[in-house]
Image 1 (cartoon, helix red, strand yellow):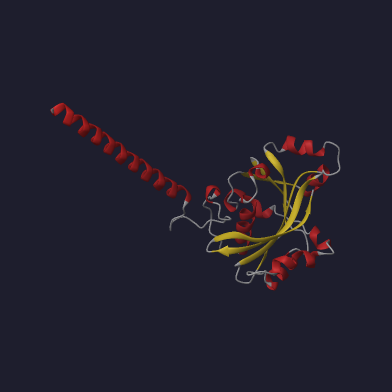
Image 2 (cartoon, helix red, strand yellow):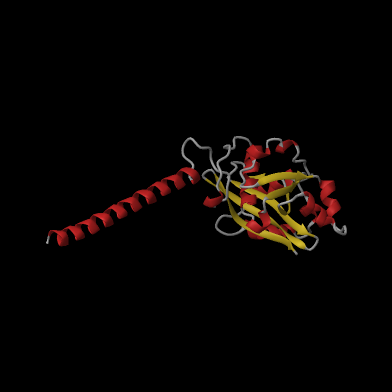
Length: 237
C-alpha cells in the first residue's frame, strides 16, 4: 500500500522539479539575450534600422560626421545577407551622378508626400552636400569604430571601381581581390534636417555589369535609432 502511494508522489515531485528547472533555464536564456541585444543605460545608442538580430552597440553620435555614419550603418544593415556577404566593399568617394538625372525632382516627389514627408530643408541640404564628390578616406580611418556592422568593411578606390565596369573579366577580378564580398556599395553624402531628425541619402549596390540597383532613401530618427521611412528607386538591372 505504501509503495502504491509513494510512486505517484515520486512522479509528481519529478514532474514539478523538471518544470521548475525548465522555468529557470528559460528565464536565464531570456536574460542573457536581453543582455546581449538590448542596450542599457551604460551602453551607447544603436545606429541601426531597428533589426534586433543585427544590432551592435557603437558610439553615440555627437557630430554630424558621426551621425552620417549612423545613417550609413542603418542602410548597410538593411542589406540582405546575399547582398552583404562576409565583407562590405565601399567606393572610397561619394557619388553625385544622380544630379544628372533629368527626372530627379519627379523621382523624389513620393518622398515628399504621405504622413511623414521629406522636409524641403532636408532635400536642400542633401543637394548642397552633394555638389561635388567627396573622399571617404579621411572619414574611415576609424572605420571599425564608426560603422556599426556585423561584418568587415573596406574601401575600393574610384579608379579601381571604374576599371571593373565594361572590362571583360573585370568583376571576376573584383571578387578575386575582395573574397567574401557580394558586390560594391556606393553612397552619397547625407543631407540632414536642421535638428538631425531626418536624413536623405542615395545608395547603389552593384554586383556586376548587369546586376545592381540605385535608390534615394529617406530616414527618420526614432530615439537614437535611424529607421528607413521611404525609398524611391532610380534604376535596377
